[in-house]
Image (cartoon, rainbow, N blue to C red):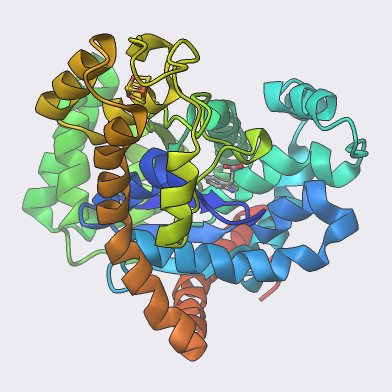
Length: 400
Ligand code: TRP
Ligand code: SF4
C-alpha cells in the first residue's frame, strides 16, 4: 500500500570489517537494485552506549560511510543519511513515547542482555531504555516496509510493529472516517468505485486475501486520488481506521557466519577482524600469522582441517577444487600451512581490491562524501516531514 521501501541503520562504533561486509553490506548492495533503499548512520543510537565518549562518534560516522561506499553501496541508487540530521526522528520518538507502555521496553531481550554484557558501562539510563523505541521511530517515519536486520534485531522490528498498530488504533480514528472514505470512493470514477466496493466486501466478509491485493493495486494506480484519500481508502479496505504508520517487516539476513582470524565469529570484541579497507600487506601478514591445526607442529605432521581456523576461511573463499586440494594436502601433509593459506590470501585481496579503490576516491575528495550525505539527508528529511505532518494532524497537533 505504501511504497515498498527498505530501511536499515548501523551504529557508528568503529571501523567495519569483513564480517560486516559478508553479513550486512553485501545484502544492502543487492537490495539497492531491487527497492528504494534508505540506509542511515544511527549516531543517536551510538550515544545510548557511548554517551561518555561521544567525541569518537564523529570520526566513526565518516569512516563508516566510506566503508559502505567501498563495499559497493551506491549513492545513486540508495539514499544515505545521518539520523541526527533528520531531527524529525526525535519528534516522532517523543510522540510515540507518550503512549508506549514501559513494560514493552523493559521486556525487549536486548535490554537486560546488554546491561549484563556491557557491565563496564552504566546503561541504567533513560536513553538506553528508549533504544528500541527510537529504532521504531527510525523505521516508522519512513513508512518502510522491509527492514533488513540480523536475528538479534528482530525483537526491535517486532516492537516497531506493535507501536505502529497502537498508534493507528489510537489516532487513526477520524470522527467522520466513513463519510470521508465514501467521498473518496466516488473520486475513483464509477467503474473503479464499483470494483473497489466489491473487492472490499470480498475481503471483509469472506477474508479473500487476493481481493485485498487487487483492491490495493487498484488504489496504487489510481491517478485521480490525492495522497490523503488514497491512504484513507487503504485504511477503509481493512477496517474503519486510517493507517498512518504501516507495520514494517523484518527481512532476516541469513546468518552468514564470517569466521575471524582465530576461527571464532569475526567480531571487534574478539579482536580477530580484517578491516574492509585493511592494507594489502597487513592482510597478508594477518593471514600468514593465523593459527592453524595445533597438531601440525612440523611441516611433515599431517593435520585435520576441522581443527584449523584457516580452514573456515577456505569454506568462505575457496571453490570446491581448492577446498579439496587443501583438505587432501593437509591430511597427507602434502602441503605446508603457508602454501594452504595462499589461495585464501589471494581471494581476500581480490575481493578487497575494488573496495580499496572506491574508498580512495572519497579519501582524496572528502567533499564528495559530504555532498552525498547532504543530498541523502535532504531526501530523507522530505519523507520524514511528510509523515510528521500526518502524525501531528492525526494527534491533533496541527493547529491550523
Ligand atoms: N539497532 C540497530 C543495530 O544495532 C541499528 C538501528 C538503529 C537500526 N535504527 C534502526 C536498524 C532502524 C534497522 C532499522 O544494528
Ligand atoms: Fe590448516 Fe591448511 Fe595448515 Fe591444514 S594445511 S592445518 S587446513 S592451514
